[in-house]
Length: 498
Image (tube, rainbow, N blue to C red):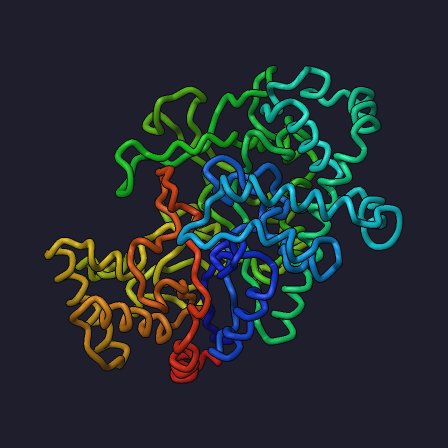
């Protein structure tokens, strides 16, 4: 297998004068940096329009683009906005302020839309294709209802009465066109970014959440595919049982799939979703992959996840369908959490690469599967994921006992791999752990930008099971890549990842 390395950085974390990273100039500058640093993969998080808590794992549409990723500067270049019109949305806070964004970005998008030539050209063809119509209809209904959830709408809209929806669409044609423009422009800008990345030898790894939000186009359009009652409310919801991270488990609240219904049409919803992801990205990481072998189901209304049960997925049929339309070498399985023989067998059958996280490796257990010397070739190795603390944050918050295990484990792995250097303070430990990732047998090693820069817990992307202002809100200032490219290139060269 070709050995490669790459960096993890969400689009929203890119530097920007306008409050959030977007598909504008800084995307291109980061790709230039990746090329200079000898990195072949840019891993990002889902690009979808976010919902409650601003999480990209809870979206109004599994196949959408986030309107906030549309670059104000790109709209100026197109003549749809003027420089003085975007200046009032300047923002330089350390974290993304989603409330501020909401108040300034949508008025800008509507102003740009008002100047768009709607009846000819690429946008007209996009509308004619119907690609984003259901999303646009859903968003228009949501706003006209006063931002109510779809299951609170009038029955004729809630249950998708054809005549009522056609009448509504005729009455609100301009509003629906606006939401189609939002998706059109975001997709247009993203395609240009991805093309530039590919031209410069960089592949984009995207992320496909396992579940979709209850209040989403996906559930509204396909209620039969989810376990819902006659009022379109979930009878069972997703989560994970109690574990090391949470004594009461995690109750995510997403409706679980009714796989008996999915089987009836050969898992068409799944194959279309995977195909879309593979069109948007070069590589796709399937989040919570273990949920495609068995999933944890909790009765709706339960106070926590303690009372859930494991249920089997018809995974042979599902992955047979996916295998007919997808190249397995382009899919990565997030096989973290409670992993059993069923998940291991599913990975073997599919041939997908699994994940190995070095943050979990050095706990004193000699048979820990995350130890760098135990990592297999068909895997993706990380120092940490978006749900973990940064390496510096992890080290600084450790007990003396855990830190002693860490230091001893890192030094032992260094001896096995032939890695030289100090490993006594937080900075040197973080550097050695990263180098052990480069040295590992994994075909791909990915390091979050936070760990390249050796940043602390205030740069953690997300803390699962919490709703914190910092979650999904970390962004970098300009010049954040200065001085690190040559060091990364040398490591990639030393360990044959160029």
